[in-house]
Length: 305
Image (cartoon, rainbow, N blue to C red):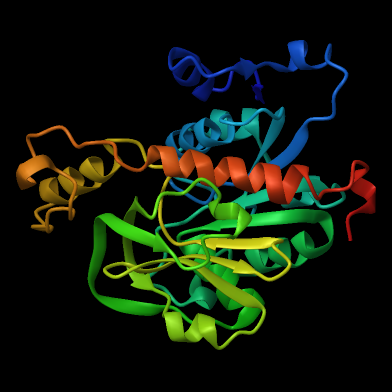
């Protein structure tokens, strides 16, 4: 089944080129079906790239998904054309009266700042508070996961001795959890962050379950016991060349960055990276949509509470 997006969204051309079933608004209205309504709070500076990455994963489902794009009012991206934001994004004041099947909160390049120092922190707190009554299930990614764990449960983040940067091996701690159905015993996930969450802090919170872990990159997926909030510290949505782009950007800045771990074949930056994580990323998003959004959300969104 398709993912429903605006006809002129830049991601459409990329996704259709990958044979992903994209449905535009005019075609969707002819179908007698209620699509899942997913709101994407995009905090990344590279908004168009992030849109495409997450829409790709959301499309790998037999469900029709209607995605709305949300931007902060208290901070305007300097890296995304204003006309793109105006054409495709809404703000919280425009949607706060609505209800959604699901919400995705992305990462943001602000992790070395205290949460309260982030310009849009108060607005993000309002959105996370609103989500408790207006969204059935919320998926937090990378810094968004750290922010969600801190806001909802008081779980702190810590600055790492060095950047967690590369593609790391992970394993399941609760293999029977529906979010992990179909996962291999070991799977790979890209990480790119300077801060982390500690396992012992998660295990102190009785409402939380640690689902997946890496011996090198640490905490990966955390779920609340009601399965209405998920926190994912990695970037399964990343494209093949995303980490390469970050590495060469820092090289060009003269920062002498370390090579991303387990990424360039033979640790040679001239070699094309192998794509080793996409299947599990698609499976994770499909399981979230099916088991925790579609199967559980009331048909009438007004009944969410």
